[in-house]
Each structure stands twice: as structure tokens, then as C-alpha cells.
Length: 146
Image (cartoon, rainbow, N blue to C red; front, side, top):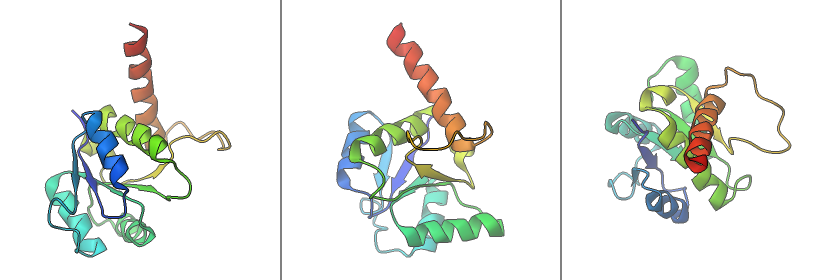
């Protein structure tokens, strides 16, 4: 099972195109007619569609954090700040997440991109974001080796 992604209007189109070229199931808020919705309504729409919401928007991140701390359901948010990740890295990380699990793996979670940085401190083993990425990377290594 894979994770279907829902892109808000802040995500560069090149990322959506790159993911589609890799056969990742992606729907944009614009394609869905939801690009004018507010952050809370957009989170509700992603939940109704069973898709993880991908955003570069700080305000949407704040709404997701509010829901997380308040126990309000949301299907998961994948957040990147556009100055900390390249288009290529975003595509690679999102592909890893999308193909490594199911929507249940990211529900009520906020995942930060990039998944890994050379200057980052080693994460704790129970970090959900990194466990998904590690599982996918292992599967990719095995596929390439075989």
C-alpha cells in the first residue's frame, strides 16, 4: 500500500511533475478545486480524501501543530521550508515516504523534509519519519542490488 499525496498551492509544480514521473499518486489542491480553501479546510479535505498533505506553508504547519496538540484528526502533514530543500531532494524524500507505507503510518503526524541532512544530529530510533524513510531506503537498496 502506498501513501497518496495532496499538494497545496505552495508546493512547486516541478515537485508534482517529478513525483508523477515516478508513479507516485499525487493530487494538487488546484486540480481538486480546493486551492482557495483556508488551512483548516484544506486539512479537512486531505483527511476526507485519505491523502497526506504536502506543504511549504508555515501557517498550514501551525494549524497542523495545533491539531496535533489538540487531538484533532488530520491525515498527516509533510512540511518543507523552501529554503532548506532542493526540488530534487523533495522529490526523492516524498517518493520514499509515499512508497514506504500507508496513510495510517502518517496519520496525526507532521513529517519534516529533508528527511536527512549531513549536518543533522542522529535521530532517535523511534522517530516515525525516519523509520519510514529507512524502510524504503532498505527496499530500494535491495531492488537495485538484485
